[in-house]
Length: 202
Image (cartoon, rainbow, N blue to C red):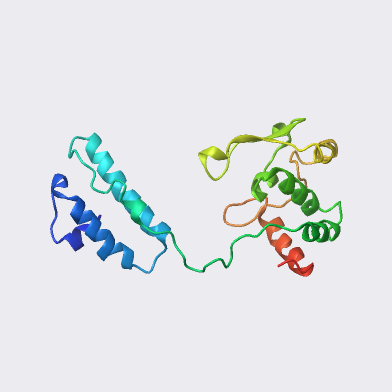
């Protein structure tokens, strides 16, 4: 808001801010910043939210920021580099054959492969959320992350085995927490990267 007011050259009454003002600010300022498209869209979202609040408080009737983020092009920085690629059958065999079946990473890999769950979702899964045919994910990175994940018939015996031989109340036992977020997947994820590279899976 302070940056916008400084660019505008005046401290305006909200109703006096026009679509032309916001469009020019996007083109002349935000689009020229050395930041990603997502950052530009997040900034527009914040500004739009302020005007929506003002509309609710009867300070103004229109939101000149509404819909503006749709005109921001998708980022092309980095091209396709760094995008995830599907594992081939050969790579999966190399991974699973390269890990002892007693290694927690083996079980995490199989559960991830057959459910699509994130690494930390698997690591944080408690036995109370593991059922015969599905795993309940109580929370995650977004509101929609809470869900029931059906278990493929091939992975049901593994999940039943893990439940039967569990010692610490989690589906994947023996994981230590770490990192700024104190996640159970922290050290496992780091070790997975080392194992993957050692097996030549890049």
